[in-house]
Length: 515
Image (cartoon, rainbow, N blue to C red):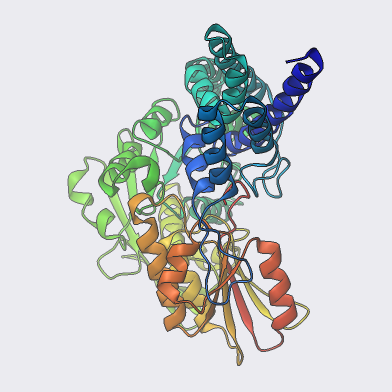
């Protein structure tokens, strides 16, 4: 092979490799650098695409990635070197088809950690090339380096994790010292869902009772929690509200070891992150790590799994919910919330549409534990607002009623959002636009089928976005379900076809690193 052809081969393979690195680094960053996440997403992007009777997108029984991989194997085995290089470069530059370099919802942000993982992945790719050279198959090695980028990045993330944990430990120690200096009352909140809403409601209920600090947004892991403390905790802070999340056993225990909760709140146990954690029993045990050092534990008594825990804890337990056998009860009565706490007069407040009543009960229970008075709750409940992108109802300029429930939907919130859609005073059509529910492990197909079936039973039309859950959604709803590739296409259809008297529920909005 001439020098010119060699240079061309190196150039095209290099460009293909760079395209793969940019795509998969973006996915890895969005998945919080979790080792093995890229292998999981590679499988998702390689899966065939389903077509429904009303789909505006043709189904693909075989994806472009799989087609190119088969061609690559054939040319590799036949020894057709130029084709091996060309197919590898084409794959690197274009695949997975639909996974963009820049991204609509999750653009690549160059950080120190990203640079470290990128360097590690580059070393891994170079090792693949070196192995090819050692076997006198340098072009095979270069081509395989393109195809194996997700695997080398996964490996780099795994190898570098201890280094990152060590570095993060310095910020944790700083946060621990800050907590010791300020000594606020710590309320820690966890749950499969409802924790961010409950945290925000508690913050609103306590505002005006002295300095209250809550972790911002969904800062609920070690890095986010330590950052929130180091940047926001000031002298005089009376209450610190800490949201605690987990992707696996031991994480909340580690958080609680240095951010020790006086009051722990558990909002729900459900199949969120079931894909990572394996079973509901594992999820339940992981969430209850928050109770180890807590003086008071507040549980959502409406949750069947949580209802059994009061007798199994040594801490004092406060049961909050909508039922009768609870310590703090909030129920809906028409357009009002009715608050009942034994020994206190009943309180009433206007119900806020889109705010989950059980989360409100848990927040009130926590507020009372840190010193708020029952008699003040009615006035303070007026402050509550739905969390952004969670069951927020608005009317568009066209007259269409819109429910925005696009943030991290789960089976329970999906049912509640569908109930909200059914309750809206509309005379026309009801649409549900959704990519479905994710991170439900073995239950994901069944849960999405069940949700789609409920959509049909409620008389709403279903538009499936993307292909992550399209097969399950179409199976549950029927072939009359519509399918589009992107949320933008769905929004365009809503604007073109719906008008005054109609309603649409936007349920979930997956980041664009999902197919």
